[in-house]
Image (cartoon, rainbow, N blue to C red; front, side, top):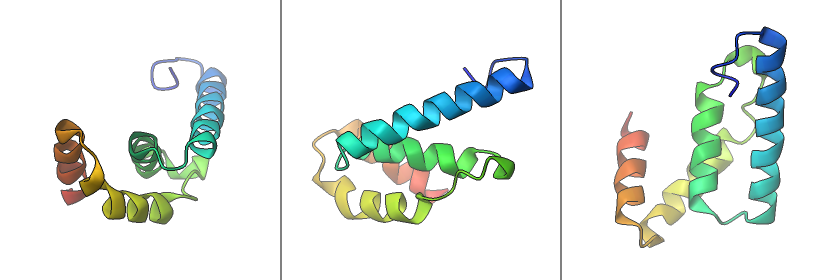
Length: 85
């Protein structure tokens, strides 16, 4: 929603709400590969002024160590392509 809102204050509000929800989900299920990937992608693509980069190294390391263990072949392919960029 933050990407599509016109009002900058609404954008920031949506971003903060999404960030909070995502971090809560990861705290509840820290071994979830897809959630970690989503957070990594979000942090790598978020504008620098939002200062949302705290978990990039941690998530990238987790993904590299665990993506081969997933049975979801589409997820493996996506992760491989994403990390090659």
